[in-house]
Amino acid sequence: CFDALHGALGDCSCNVDTIDYFNNVKIFPRIQSLVSKDYFRFYKVNLKKECPFWADDSRCAMKHCHIKTCSKDSVPGYVDEHENERPAEKYTKIDQTACSTDEDHDPDLGYLNMTISAASQYEIAKWNAHDSALENFCECDDKDVEAEYVDLSLNPERYTGYKGPSAHRIWRSIYQENCFRPKLNPYESFPYVLSSDLSNMCLEKRVFYRAISGLHSSINIHLCSNYLLSEKGVDFAAPPEGEWGPNLEEFQRRFDPSQTHNEGPNWLKNLYFVYLLEMRALSKAGPYLETEEYFTGNPTEDDETRAAISNMLSVIYSFPDHFNESAMFNGGSQAAKLKNEFREHFWNISRIMDCVGCDKCKLWGKLQTQGLGTALKILFSSQWDSLEADPEQGTLPVRHKANKRLQRTEIVALFNAFARLSNSIRQLENFRIMLSANKEPE
Ligand code: FAD
Image (cartoon, rainbow, N blue to C red; front, side, top):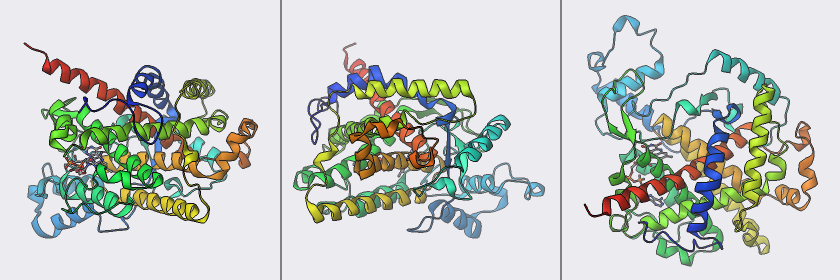
């Protein structure tokens, strides 16, 4: 797949090799260090939202388990007298492991660590008080009563075993129902969209598809690069331990042209494409992002975060070939209609994330969708155009309510989503090295 992964990306003036160098050398170390800071480490999200499109898979499996096949004896480690003490969430996870037969997912690997230390809880309470004084202007999970903070560093995005009909229903509905598909794949099977059809689409629809496909590539690269290589130590009651690392075979299965109807290299190019798109959003919102407080209540940490943001943005500004969003949505009422559709389609995709049947996949799926949605908002809403035309607007301190353009969760999602894409591009380099080592004669 790497032989075809060179040269022009299409739909922009940039090429793959330029991004490889820029990302791996300049962006990757900076963004990884930035998202490890407290401000970016805790993400507020509601993972209990009802799936609006079909019965939630995880709950579905659980019900099936309870009503039909599951006896208490079959639950590993189940002790009857503790029934009332056992947290409901854990109980259902254990049930599912014992009873689910369709192997759609492995709830144990999808285990989500919701631990927040007492010190962090205290800090977060202070952040909430601070944030509630600010005006919210977008619909984010963080105002939901069921939203909770998750420590992202305790829940790395990696292989969870989520696959089969449940995962396919999510991807299929994203591509088939929401991606402005040029026409149905006549076989109604994989791949959902043929890249050869893209040339018949207008730029806007192509960009939409490529952004989603790039996100899909990134998720799959993460599960290949952080794969469960050996299961020793995995038990039902604790987060899985074992040996985690890159799985070249799995990567090739997913991206090699011969195993993907020649689509693999295009899917990888779409990763670079969505990376460019998010980087452009960061650049455009830069004057604003540089004035955010990044409040955690720890002045030293906050100063360091602001300095790290400025440093990273200055590197981003220096990138020579930014994505040019001004070529999109030009042409009167038709363009306005298209933009509206674009927004609605994306909004649907973000809601589909509530249907993902594995907690950890849902967490990262929601975060990355929100990050991409925030990037699209920055690129395609007029208030951000005026910021760029008059950067002075961005220099006003964001403490003033009127200048608060993004909520904390949006900022956290935007940077973390970009960090994921950056990491994926970096992981490609690892796979490239592994592959060439494999090819070398003995
Ligand atoms: P899938 O990735 O399910 O893809 C289905 C079909 O889509 C493929 O057969 C192919 O035709 C097409 N396709 C594949 N890649 C692309 C692309 N980049 N662009 C366009 N079309 C493509 N699993 C984990 O182990 N860890 C996770 O953290 C995780 N997070 C997930 C988050 C979400 C939101 C979803 C929906 C799934 C997640 N999964 C995760 C599952 C994972 O993405 C796959 O669905 C699963 O591994 C099964 O893979 P597959 O080979 O059947 O193909």
